[in-house]
Amino acid sequence: MLSLETIIDEVIKKSTLIQGTFSQLRTGSSSTYSKVTVKPLELKGELHYQFSSFGGNKVLHDNLLPAAAASRILLLLSDTYRQGLIQAATADYQVLINKKGKLGILAKPPTKKPAAVLSHNRKKNYLLEEGTPVPFLVELGIMNADGKVLAPKYDKFRQINRFVELIADIVPHLPTGRTLNIVDFGCGKSYLTFALYHYLKELQGFDIRVIGLDLKEDVIRHCSELAERFGYDGLQFLVGDIADYNGLAQVDMVVTLHACDTATDAALEKAIRWQAGVILSVPCCQHELFQQVKSDVLAPLLQHGILKERFSALATDAIRAQLLDIMGYRTQLLEFIDMEHTPKNILIRAVKGNSLKAEEQAAMVRSYLDFRSFLHAAPYLERALGAELQPLLDTAGKLETIVEA
Image (cartoon, rainbow, N blue to C red; front, top):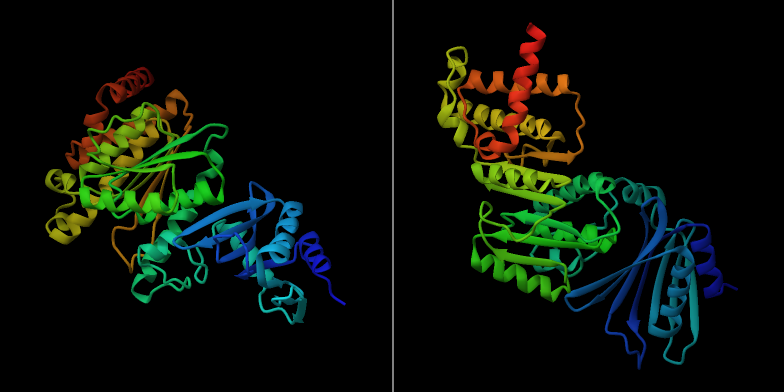
């Protein structure tokens, strides 16, 4: 005869648990959570089990090692809930406890495939999955209360997951053992700000302080109310301008998504001056270079407004990436979401620590200056960096003179 202890010990020890769901509060239970789910999760190379406790508009996440997870599951079914579904690789176990406390267990063939679930966790390492309600996604109108993604919001849902995937790639570059400061310039409705906080704080366990900055007072007020409702103590929203913000002396990550025109450059300048370890930027509406670019060679392209606009946007991002590299970053330009959803789909991801030899840096500076001169461009970011960038430009020029001599 199956015993609850045997089942729990089996699925945890052999790592076959795929998902557990516990519901139907017992009479007299003091718990305020109507449901608890558990899933395996790989954190920093080690298997954990994430317990998500749902109550009203709040969710509490707790990541436990296998032994502690087994004890928690047993406690949930022996003390708090009358119903449980334990889905494992070998079988599904339906657990029912009647009002008199009598336990019944029914074993059925498995309904979930472990390989797909676990490979998803290892690859993306987040739980923003359809079918699992995430409170801020429900509140922001992307999911319904059952975790189903609303059809008009599916592109946004994919965008959020893609953003979290890009964050996952830079986790190894984040310092540990202290509070991380993260600033999101131009946060807007903050779909991605909430996703960033959820992933780094709730799923990865980082000690973080995130500040979302935007000029719209009503948007900031609404986001602040949501952060308080979800219990996100480390997430703060402020009204303010990118160029004027000086609330922190040191920042570890700077995020700027769809900041218009040179507002993106203002955020990049701030990040460079802070020597932020990570920069994530999705530019928008690059008008500056459109007004500057001139070239007889490129006349067949530049005479068409739509082509000139797209070329100017790409050239602007190329200039930004090159300047970030010159200033000591390893920079990548990545596809943020599919081009079919928006033409503004390039994300600049820069990680501090680009160690260049003097000759390599000189070649990079020369390449940048040639490109900028060819386009007759005077980029905002170059002007803004001024005193920090000029010595590198001067040094590169001196090295080139020595080589030519």
